[in-house]
Image (cartoon, rainbow, N blue to C red; front, side, top):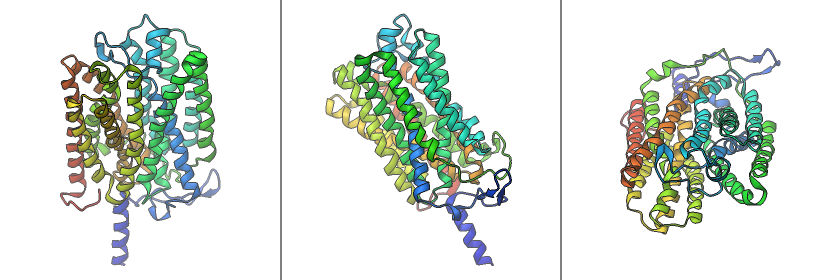
Amino acid sequence: MADSLHEDSEKNSSTGLNQSEPSLDIDAAKGRRVIPSGTPSDIPDGGLVAWLQCVGSFILFFNSWGIVNTFGKCGEYAGLPNRSNILPGVFQTYYERTLLPNESASNISWIGSIQASLLILLCTVTGALYDHGYFRALIITGSFAVTFGMMMTSLCTTYWQLVLAQGVVVGTGCGCLFLPSVAILPSYFSKKKALAQGIAASGGSVGGMIYLILFHQLLPRIGFGWATRVMAFFMLGTLLIPLLCMRTRVKPSAQRRLIDLAAWKEPPYALFGAAELFGFMGLYVPFFYAQLYAIEKVILTENLAFYLLVVLNAGSIFGRIIPNYLADKAGPMNILIPCAVATAILGFLWIGISTAGGIFVFCALYGFFSGSFVSLPITTAVTLSPSLGVVGVRMGMLFVPIGLGILVGNPIAGACLRGGWTGLEAFCGATVMVSGFGIVAARVARVGMGMTAKA
């Protein structure tokens, strides 16, 4: 008896889940068997149905983060004088140069900021709704909102119309799609959950590349209205895939709280949340400013600089899959720590880059190592959750510091740029390095100082 209990305890600790929750055998509403929310031994960890969920999650990332990544990066962010957006063909550029020439670049950038902030900050609400069993309702609502929002964007002619259509409606839709895409996978994968999350997260990078190039190529041929509508139709077509193939496997065994404040009293969770705040303050600085750097330093032409963002996204595809594959074997925090250090070092090395080859290599490597910051925190949130039944809420809460970091980080970087490029690049490296130290502290709080412990 003692040996059996010891073996069960080891299984629980290796998955980071607590199996003390009561099970529910019958879904009274639908009359079918319900799998309890804390039984990793029942998780299929593969098979056609499980991998179809991964494909569906990839599409949801593709149409949430992928859409957000197409808006554009503003050189006049935070009021920087005499710097316009250098990304030809993305929304910010078109609005500045054609549709809204009388609006400042910083005002226009709020459309994209609202969109991105809603994607992240709504996770607190959508996480709780997911845990209460509203997965399909979130997917349907999100699919309608992003498609309808983009269709309405194609008809907009004024600033406030774009704020409402592209900022609020599309941003709300992205927020409904994002968290379900990551919360569903732990119920289908145990030993391969990090790899599955990484493959799904790579959809954001692939979507960013495809939508950037699609809009860039269509705009001069068919105009803004139809270029945006083609994107909306493409979104609608691809979103039919998760609507058809994605199904929840774990049903809620009891009514959940909308927020779990007790999680912030757990040192590993609180330290990891603080680390993510600092990490995301500096993480996206090269995504916003690498193109502008290449133009101002006369390293690349304006048209060639456009492809730096494509290279960053391409590197991020591999950076969201390969580290996650290793994380299934070593633990997500054990992989995230060296990736954070490498990302920080690259931020500091950016200071000395002055050649075309150097900036492209930097973008490829930075995209790779920074990619783990998007995919591995999701897996880490699962390991820091006591059961699968609260994964949605805990993920949603963790995205609050992440969203705040994204919201304030780039304006701070813009303020640093007023004193020269070195300050901006140092800010990037320093914030990500602080994040790395925070992840180390979270790991120690969870498993101690042992170098071989899986965490």
